[in-house]
Image (spheres, each protein chain N blue to C red):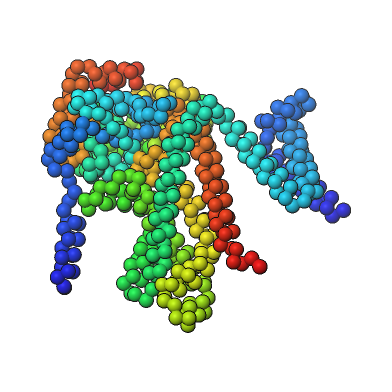
Amino acid sequence: MTLRMKVMTGLLASALLVPFAAQAGETLDRVMSTKVLTMSSDPAYPPQSFLNDKNEMAGFDVDVGREIAKRMDAELKIITPAWEIITAGKWGGRWDMSVGSMTPTTERANVLDFPAVYYYTPASFAVHKDSKVSSIADLNGKKIGVCGGCTYEAYLKKDLVIDAEGVPAFDYQVTAGEMRLYETDTHAFDDLRLGDGTRLDAILSALPTIQEAIKNGYAMKVVGDPVYYEPLAVAVDKGDAEFSAKIAEIVKAMHADGTLSKISQTWYGADLSTVK
Amino acid sequence: MAGQKRALAFFLAAAVVFFLLDIGTGFFGRLLAPAGLTGVAARGAVAVVLALILTGNIALLRLLPFWPQVIVVWLQLLLLFLAFFASFDLSYDFILTRIGFLITQGAFTTVYISLAAIALASAIALLGALARLSKNGFAYAIAGFYISFFRGTPLLLQVYLIYLGLPQLGFVVSAVPSGIAALALCYGAYMAEIFRAGIQAVPRGQSEAGTALGLKPSLILRKIILPQAIKIIVPPTGNQFIAMLKDSSLVSVMGVWELMFLARTQGRAEFKNLEMLITAALIYWILSAVFETIQSRIEHHYRKADVR
């Protein structure tokens, strides 16, 4: 090995070996000095977050993010990478937090930190308006559509683990005959609205999203009570404990002073910041 | 006589197909409703009427000379296409309120990402092709490896690799440059092969003649080989550009607000997906048509040498 080759291999090896992790306090320092808090958000998930008629991001998650930024005395900047890019972790400082209705599952906790649960979404089944299904028990053996990689898929596969405080216990009430996976919930809605059993017999999704679709003319109806409540948390990159603590403190204050209930009332017409 | 028999056979076949597929009973069924037909009779009547229209149309079109025929068929297909869209019962007001942003933000981003990627890809392709043709084992191996990998993996995967992978090495590249890099690298690999084939298609005697005249290899390449290779390279390269224009939609996974991204997201809040998707389809189509025109202009320019 010549000296030049040695140096080059050394450089290459160190570039590969040094893990790229945020240093302690780095994110918080950046936000505090630039006065900009960058948040990632899904542009196609109404009413949590969506592009409104002025082509700006709006929704429950966006308002929560804006409030967090306000309490950090920073300006909120929103970017919209795909879901799998957010959940892949290792954000490299491209954005600071995700207020994206993310369920803090054990697998996700391997790559991301979840400093604070900010609300709970009821998960419900829905069927086509003309369907004869009248109770959750009728759904056994049906063709059910869910978004792939979501907790709804885990529920139907009966391996949903939610380990957050204050979440009521649930049991698996439905065994799907066939499960169809979609990129996002609304694609499943589009298939269900084609007709009862045309492509799907039922869907399992967030109750607020289902209600929003029904309000917008989707021929669907909700079946029974919510089957479980999923906690939804703010997610941050691993490695900055001070930033996590700051987020946790802010969200706790927003729970306590009723800000979250108020934002929830605005977008969902109900208080989802606590479990009933 | 044979022509009439053929027309009759065509008419019958069309009527049977229309009847079996149950096409047009909605719209034409309403038109024929006053005749008082229902059920199978109505379906049969609609099939006969449609088949008559189709057969008559073709018979009339046969009377026209070539170019009017082409234009009329184009217009008819376009009308059918529009009727197909119209049947979706779209909200045009909704499209009108969103189309401005779709063009100024979406189409603009798509075009500038594509143009930047095309310029870079052309440079990469020329280097790649020359390396593939060189006698330097080092250059040949690097180019071969690069072309093999980037042609052999999906573009979407390359986008993810560049956007998610580079930060692991400490290079945090933002979304637009990552997208341009992925598109340029992927299309550079395809185009390198096109360029190589184009250069190799120039007869050997051309460079030998240059050598015999005492010209330097670089001058032979620039003044003799490349000008002749370009006219072979242009048509397939134009193809690649049009394909890239549409593949640039893959950078939307990184959250770049280009045409496809907005088409997918703009309608979501009101659950109006088809409106924006169809609008985006038309915009892509128009952009591609512009690229096609530019390509044929360039082709024409480099073909001047062939005109006698």
